[in-house]
Image (cartoon, rainbow, N blue to C red):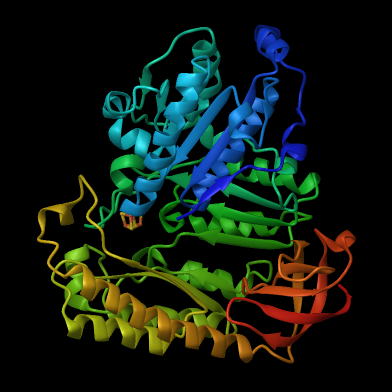
Length: 467
Ligand code: SF4
């Protein structure tokens, strides 16, 4: 898990609208906001929406912690490491707060929802704790805090999440041609290791009209790719099913690519598979977390599928879209995981040959069912299994990448390459990163690129022609 700092002050200092009269005092102050983001793409999107809302009220963004009047720590608690990173950053801010008591520090996201008042007790320099269902209140709470109302906790679950309908200003993001769009939030699955249902709450789907309206608005602003987000998009119920939503989005002019994450394998049905056969704008990639290759462990994880069922599902997707690429999440060292269980996980990796695998050591999360089990796989053994798994996956990824050498792909250009001066980078429909020599003016366009070389984490190519 990483912390993303919205570090580029230049695009962030733009304001979108004139501030409301009620907010004029804030504009006069030119309050500056710094946002730290931990965790997944949903948190990245929440931070962009937070930034958008602040910008609409006349706040400016800053890349510099020391000059901020407001610091938002948007947290993740899915893994212990992400939780500790957020806490450590928060701890470091206490010195800044002592030096400048007017500074407002707000904690949002999963840790805010998890720790609530406990966070204020442990970190008295925190002014606001705002949970996952209440982010729409953050700008008002910050304005109140700037006037002196500090030490507030707002973290109740609600039956609707107004923030899902907030349309982020994609021009504030590094990739204005791509829009991340929330379709649902929360989870009813209660996998035994997972804290998400406890901190994001039950599943709540956004109305399809709202999703489609947002995407139409993005398309009119030049967005080419939409990335639909939810903890389990396959259980979307916003007036239509998720496959129906995909078909509706597919018909929106201007949208060239559709991606989504995350899919629970048990809810990936024939209609979803058929979308990969029928909808050319749907990218040739699906993220299908399998977590373990052992049926025994899958039962203990409360995952509701077997390894054979998962492998058959992979084959159904391959029949529908033969060149589809797969990524997944997998865990080692779940309580009771034996060497045999681990070998079964390795066997799934051999059979599926994922392009990308996000692999983790099990860590106990509070409130979860697995927290009552003995964490009995020794830390050294968890590390060994992870090393073995990651080493093999690196080989498979490189082999998959090498198979792409000589092929030509449509690449949506994202920005300057971080690897080589004068190169730009983009993504294929399979979500593979390609670096190639090209002008910055190509950013946001789809071009044809022939792959000439494969690296571990990316491809190198040459421009064929503008598509
Ligand atoms: S499906 Fe399972 S792993 Fe995914 S968010 Fe829900 S409880 Fe967590």
